[in-house]
Image (cartoon, rainbow over all chains, first blue to last red; front, side, top):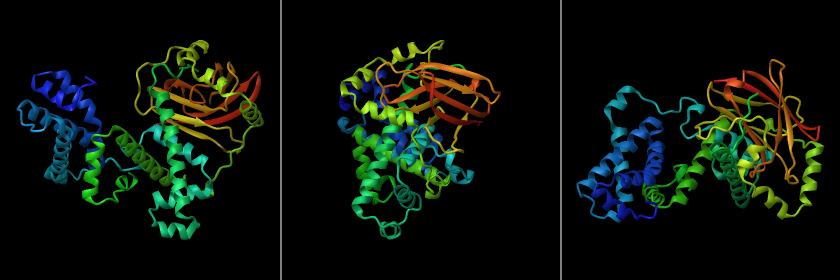
Length: 191
Length: 208
């Protein structure tokens, strides 16, 4: 299935191939989830949007309503957007006073232990001035001119600090992900 | 990409970018990394970790400095030999070790340890009742076959040891411990090489 184009997957789904349906979900499920999570800030809502989006997409495919099978990704995206809007406008959501999963920093749906660990490790690798820049830019969200005035760095330096911090975070995060995901990769010890 | 994550694009620009990453796997992964990076920095800011007044100075233990200098003299070929060894072989070298849980776990607690001489330097590890906690100790490149031993003093003053740890393909000594073995309290970990202590760490284990 990996080598199948989107258009071929659509044709297979129309012919009743359930594996093709799963493959379509594998290809676009994570992006749909991310899009929903970004707007709704709730894991459960994002999961609901993803499920509903693929339900509608598969129904549309089986009903042969897809005019351009090769553009199925755009159809999934637009379907997801519609459902996100429906969710945001839902009177049920408003009435429940549902708040996103951000009651505290630990509940941020985007964060996991590996992110927290990678950030802590990255910060240790930075100089105090670089750490100050990250605080002013990403945490305080000050304008660049104000940051430049406070800590006296130019645009090129800004670019280098961001690039270095992000590169460091990416490397450490990927190593940590591999450590916890690799089958049998980290020996377990009873103490 | 950062402008998208920080919602600095116009709605039209955002939609155009979303159309793109829905078809470009690489761009999607980069967007996710930036999203997590910024979310992580916000959390760090909330916890005061971005305050420059709390800068910690890391001092390399003399043994690590020597090890680093020695390692720099080795050729890239030795590093390749270390990196090319199957990961499973490193597991087999550990003594009396149950096999690792083959199923990936979500939100596995991880503590990254660095050699640090600051007197009150401690790491905090927040764990649940089930699953494993991963310990990750960065070490400089080592000659092939270099092994480390670790003694762990638990809050109950019990002493346990893990022998034969080897630097993995990512440049660290990594091992996991079942959460059920980690009662809350302060653990002192002493890393030694050839019976000589090279680093010491303190970890405060907290139950969620």
